[in-house]
Length: 197
Image (cartoon, rainbow, N blue to C red; front, side):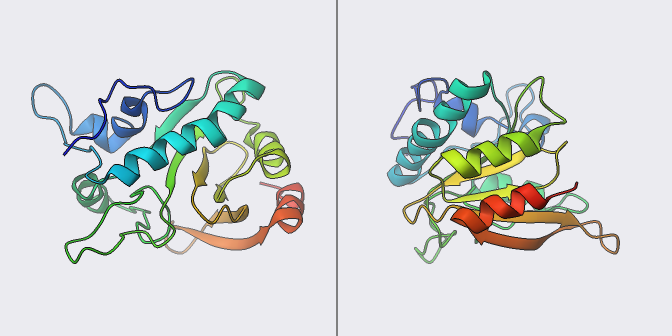
């Protein structure tokens, strides 16, 4: 069931379509008339995406200009396709890309609820560390995953508004990304300042 139209505004700068028809796997599997149905089934997911857009992304856009979303909402349909990829690195139980969706038992897929996206700032693709520091210092958010100064940032909004910063590093052993440190509020800001990658 669709509670909103894909082209409805989620925030000042984004429509719901920007979050739902987003990412490499969605594009690769949505050619021609066959499209992945990646729309949220829960009204709270639509509302959480709108909160992410207005509370978190609109202020980032106002500071830096246009943002380029690389990964947004992830339905169970999309998650199945992503999990088939080599070195798939998704964690639906914690990463908030599943928003407020429910599993077949009626339980929240992600215990943090809310919504998440990953993005670049065009023209600053190698300076995402500066954006991460500004965000950690100036924004309300739930979680930010920092992968490196030349990698997209993951940002989420959720009911706990934890302001959790998680540093992610790629393991030389399995080529998967793993948390290498985390902190909240001022400790999170210090973590971003200490980053050398």
